[in-house]
Image 1 (cartoon, helix red, strand yellow):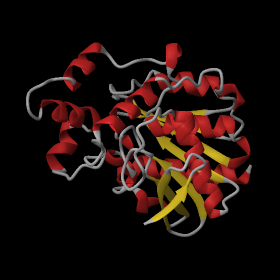
Image 2 (cartoon, rainbow, N blue to C red):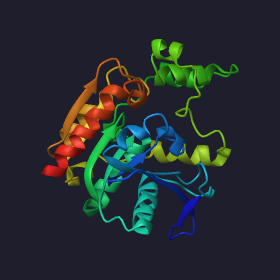
Image 3 (cartoon, helix red, strand yellow):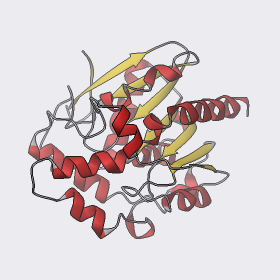
Image 4 (cartoon, one colour):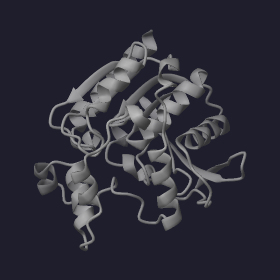
Length: 262
C-alpha cells in the first residue's frame, strides 16, 4: 500500500493505475476508492487514474478530529504533491464532487478540467433530499436502510440483473466516529461563494431520477460556475456513473479530451 503523510500527520492511502494524463477520481461520502472499481478501467485506454481513501476510510488513518470537504481537498493536493503531479483533471461524484469544488476553487492551478457528478453546492443554496428519503434511510428494521440506499443508487431493473457486490454503499470497515465525521463534513459543505472562482472547464453530470442528491442541483452548479456545461442522464439514479457507464464514461472522456484542446 502506498501512502502520503499530510501536514497534520495523517497517512492517506492512494492508488495510481493506468497510463496517460492523470485523472483524479473522488468517491462519495463514507466510501473508499472501491467506489470506482466497476468503471475505473473504462478510463484507462486514454488516461491514468488516481484515487485515494479519504481519511476515515480504507487504508488511510482514521483520526477522530473534525473533517471537512476543504480538508479532504487538502489531502488530495498532498497526494498530487507526493507524486509530482502539478496539474490533473478531477472527476468527483456525490461528496467527491463537493471535494472537487473545493480543489478547483482553492487550488485553481492544479486542475485542468473538472467534472462534477451527482453533487451539490451545499448550504442554503443546495436542494436537499426529501424527508421521505431521509426516513427511508433511517428505518430501523434489519436491512431496510441498506435496501433503501440500493434503490436510491440503482434502478430496479439494474438491481435485478446485477446481484452485487456493491461498492457504493459505504466502507464496511469504517469506525462509527469516522462515519459521523464524514456525514458532518458533507452536510457542512458550503461552496456557493466559491463557485464563481472556478476557472477550469467544467462539466456537470446528473441522473434525472436521482433522489439522494436531487437533480435540481445540477443547473444550480452549471449556472454558478463560469462557462460550465451540463448533461442530464435520463432515468439515471445516484450511481449513474456505474449503471449508465456506457453513456457516462464516453461523455466524460470526450469532455476531458475537448477541454485539453482549449
